[in-house]
Image (cartoon, rainbow, N blue to C red; front, side, top):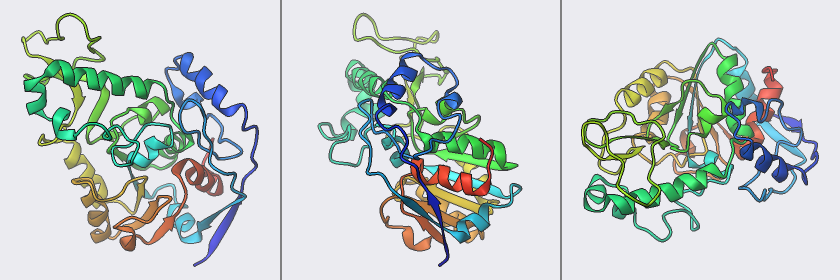
Length: 304
């Protein structure tokens, strides 16, 4: 397997966390400006305190990856999971320190839980919203914005609900599980913008009288109308499919890689660790997305 090495210059690490906090406080509307240029050190901050991984001297990129992506007319589909958000400091639901640690999912993330105790469910989701507000898109998010502009046919599918892809500047991500930063009516489904609940007074209600809830998919619910269909359509016609920061076992998103494989796409897995489905990929990049995607983009000559 031929590899291409990309050099990394560490850059000013000490200024990195301060810069993140300053930009978040400035409430940037279009965070495409956050990493308007690829960071010279290709490192990813983890949370507002900016815990950084060890400096890596080189990144080994399989030449087959570069070959698969060299044609800007290629039909490219990227599917992202919790690992991408974790690089920005968003806790995952499947690690020892995640948000599920002290609460069982079925206690709060179900329609039954909301019907039983909507106030408690809202309080938990407002806590989660607060966590998301402390973080920013990382270089992986922002690199995918460049890819969206570069490739003539590009589809971004995400299992993440934090909205960081949109904050980075992605125009039309397919959010399979919804967006935690927005709300909708539990009865009629009417979108309600960023309405929330501060823990006091009456619970927010729609004009129809129904309770307003976080705009996410709960256990036992259907995915947003058309989301899965659009994903399948894009994957079936994809020439290159990238699975980025996902375990590949959560359905229905897990079926996308298999569908891409059966449709003849070239499959690339971006994940620091092996997954249960790594065997089906044609190439693997064992790095965090915020490190390796900008390196791939640089090698391909994708414009800043």
